Structures are given as C-alpha cells and as structure tokens.
Image 1 (cartoon, rainbow, N blue to C red):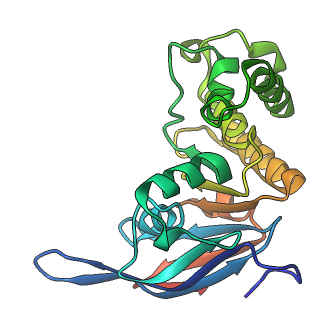
Image 2 (tube, rainbow, N blue to C red):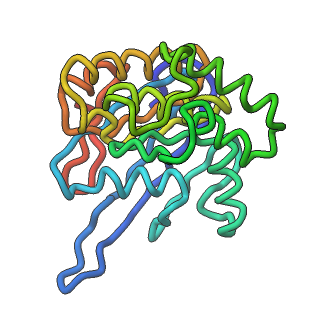
Length: 229
C-alpha cells in the first residue's frame, strides 16, 4: 500500500527468505510493500527478526529465495553482481550505526566520497559535499578529521555523505544506536528533512520507538511478516 497517491518507485513483491541452519526458519514470509518518492517509513522488531536482512535485500546485498525488489523500474533481484554494485553506488544512500567514516579523510572528503566513486569531478564533488554538510549544520567543520568529531557530528557527516549524490533510496540501519538522546533527535530530524527535501524514499530500521515515531508510517517485522504497527 502506498502512503499517498504517487507512482511507486520501490516495489517489494512477495519476498521470502529462509535461514538454512540445523532447523530451517523462515526469516521473511511474503513481504510486499510499495513506496513512492518522499515516503519515509520505519521498520521495528526484536533482534534477529530479520530487519537487517530485509534492508540488505532491498539494497541487493542479499537475495530472496523468491520474490522481487524493483527500484525505479529496475529489478535488483534479477541483476548481476556488478550491476547491483553500480545501482547501490548511484541510487542508494546508506546511514549506519557505526558511522563508517574514513579516519584519514577530512569531513569534506568523506562527504564527497560517493560522488567521486560515481565519476563526479573533484570540483563538483567538493561543491555538492559542501552543500550537503551545510544542510546538516557542518559547513564550518569541512577541514576537520573524524577523530575530532563527537558522535552526533560524525553521524551528521554520514547523513551528508549518504544524501550528497541525491539518491532515490536512503537506508538507515540503527543510525542513532551510538548517540545520546539530544544528538539522536538532531540526526533524525535532519535525516527526515533531507529525505523530504530531495523526495527520496527513506527506510529506517530501529529498535527505538522514539526514532520510529519520526517516520510517516511504522511497520513491525514479526515471525517473518511485515505488519503495519
């Protein structure tokens, strides 16, 4: 079900995934979802319920036993590995709990990294990265290194990096797990604002009910089923 009357850009269709351990267990069962540009949802659930598996499947880092993931008319599940890698680099932005900033690069160069990997010229990559950092309140920190930043500042750099290339889809996996309450609130507010401004699709995976409440709609993953919360 779409959150509003706009054409779907992300389609999850009847996704199934089974854990092949000593006792096979269904991680995802018939998961279907449609999202349009500007939609921002949260997925909650207990540890081990399959939230990160679902996020990895949407990004093409993992594949379902059956079902399809389609982004902007392109079937991620039917692509080869190289095509999925290019699609992730071009069309998806990632925000992780651990920030994953490169310590030997400045804040500006960290934010420009995806742009440069996409072949954007050095000058344009720096310009767009600077604008992204300004949008999260870090225009004055561009020459600093990650080791000098607070946790909240580091995560804001990660948000800027994820959004600088204006991706169609933003995937945030526990982005506030390492932050204090005030920093978490700031990061979540900025993440939502930037997703809405760029008309990206945002999917937030979190254990936090407070974090989930910033989304347009909340889903719970339980016993392999994706249910409206």
